[in-house]
Length: 328
Image (cartoon, rainbow, N blue to C red; front, side, top):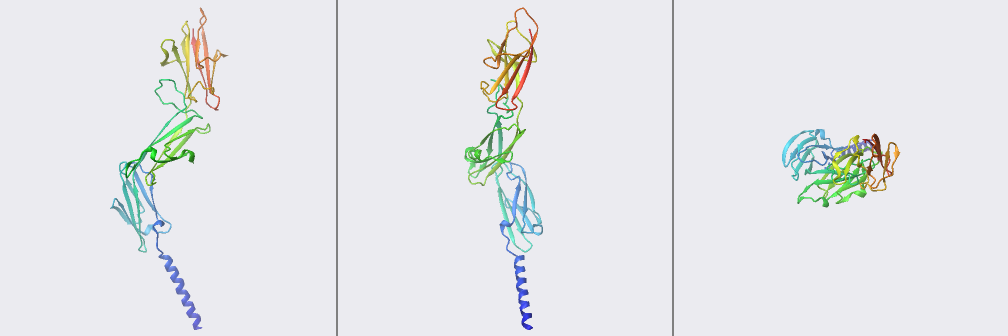
């Protein structure tokens, strides 16, 4: 009887010791995560830092936040901290010390170097007439070119755009064939089912310690046809487009139909089809196909309608008609 009691006591002590050891297990630095939002801060931007853990009771820990070795916030359960970044190239060292309820110390440190990136786009295969001062726009099923221009500073100075790694994403889908070292631009063709495209890029230096990200939302545009008058001596009168009505010179006129924002950029391409008609009757396609010479019959007066249809036969929605009324 006495031996049984002794064995029970021994077992109880061993179990108690096991629970005691588990309760005060050594906490690792990796048991606590320090994150910032935004992940890639811009210059002079407000940033929120947050602590989180599944292994440490941070609500009861004494937490002290320091910026560049200067304590700015401390207290029980202070799991969040806000601060502002400096100028481009400046670095700020954020450090947080946690004293847990069981007397253990954890320190997390992160260095923030604000960076920025400009996202530019162009329409490399969209038609605009000569001397057009505006920006070519991209039609449905047209081609976009997005260029990332980072302002990224490292310990040795500003990084060249060609000496950085670029990871491109289109509408949430990675683009591995367009990503890589020095690939600072991304070219893609719009799908007719897509009304807009969101393009993102993550940029980092060779060490991976300095990073920046950028994004841009792109929308396609509707092409348009504009009529101009061409003078045999002066050329096309780009300064004045023709309205819906105009009067023909008795000696004849030369009409120029410019298909703004159609693709391809080369309007002589066989993919672009021009169909002209007079009062509903088809006309033979002129050469060049966007220029039509007209002359009223001598001694007659009246009115007529000229219609032009432009279509990219390789697409579904790049198609447009324009009509102009003439008096003679």
